[in-house]
Image 1 (cartoon, rainbow, N blue to C red):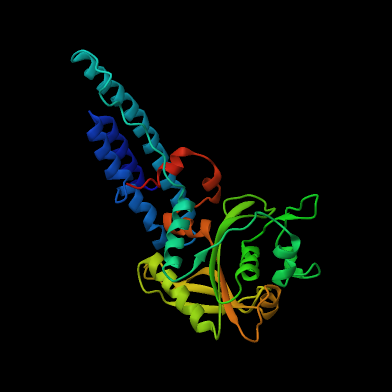
Image 2: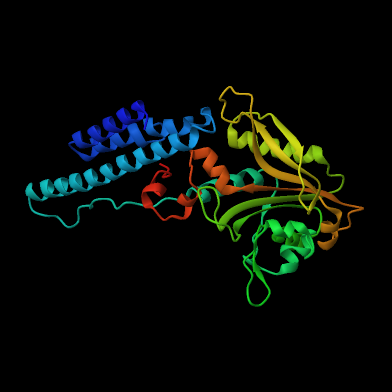
Length: 335
C-alpha cells in the first residue's frame, strides 16, 4: 500500500471514529466513499497507471475501501443504537413515530451498465430481445457458421446437457431467432448471461454477461457500423472517441474486426484499448436466419458487460461480480 493511500485510509477511519452522530457519519462516508469521494477518485485514476502498476494498486484501493466500509457499518450500528436510546430516554415511547430507516439494496453494477446500454441503443432505434440460456446446438453453433468440424468450436469449451443441448456460449443465437421471427429490416440488441467451461481466475469466469447487437437493412455497410459504435462509445465515455478497426476472425461475420479506442481514460498516453469485436454479418448466417443476402446486408457486434464494468469502475477481479459480498455491491449504490 502506497504511503498516500495508507494515510488516506487512516484519515478515513479516524473521521468515522470521531463522528458523534449519524449526520456526521454520513458526511464522512460522502467525503471518502461517495461519488466524488477521495477513495473513489483513486479508483478512477487507475486508467492513468501502467498495466504493470494497475492490478496491485487497484487491489490496495479496494482493500482500503473494504476496511473503511466495515468500520463505517459498525459505527453506524452503534450510533443508531445511541440515537434510539436518547429518544426513549427523553419521554414516553410513541410507537407511531417513524423508526430507523432500513438499509435498502441497490442494482448490481452489471445491471446498471446493462440498463444504460439499453437506453443508448433504444435511442438509436434498437429493440431489446431475450432468448433461452439452454440452447439447441443448431442455434448456438451450426446456424452461426460454426459446424461440428470447425476449429472455432475449440475456443468455446461448452457445457453440454444429456439431451444434446448446451448452455449458450454467447447471446448470438437470439439474433438468429430474431431474424427468423421478425425478418428484415431489423435492429436488435441481446443482453444476457452466457456460460463457458472456463478455469476461474481474476479475469475468467464460467458465467459471464454479454450484449450483442444486430442491424440488417438494405445497403448496410461498414460506415454504418462505425457510426453506431462511435455513438455508443461517445455516450459511454462522455467524449468523441478516436477508434480504429483491426482485422479479426469470427465465423459469423465477414469481414470481421476488432474495434480499439485511443486512450479512453485521457491518460495522455499514445495507447489503444481493445473494446469489442464486430463485423458484417456473414451471408450464410443471413440465409440461416431466413434473409436473402442478395437483398439485405447487416452488421453485428458484441460487448462483454463485465469487462466494461471493470474498466469503468476500476475492478481488478471478475469474481467480485458473483461473489455475493454486500460490501462490494454497496460501492455501486446510487443516490
